[in-house]
View 1: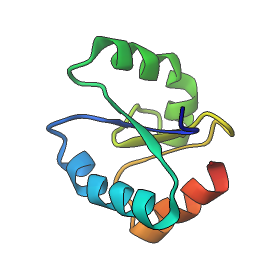
View 2: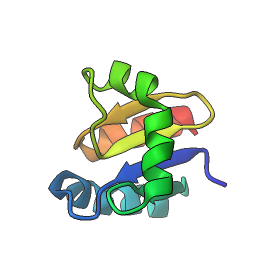
View 3: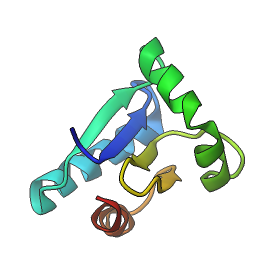
Length: 94
């Protein structure tokens, strides 16, 4: 099981923009994300909602996607970000 989770929506344009960066990071650094679709999967939707307080605190008071979560550190960030920011966060929190 990966320490890092990516919560995303299948049709979300921001999630689609981040997916190639996540895949690049997985290839280049070897860090793996567990990818959990939340718009069409009730179990995953319930799971992200269980982390509501952490996610809202990190994401401006809302649950936003894409949402990146670390099981190890409980660190969270959301929205589209440049590759280097994603890489830095993933290395720090994996």
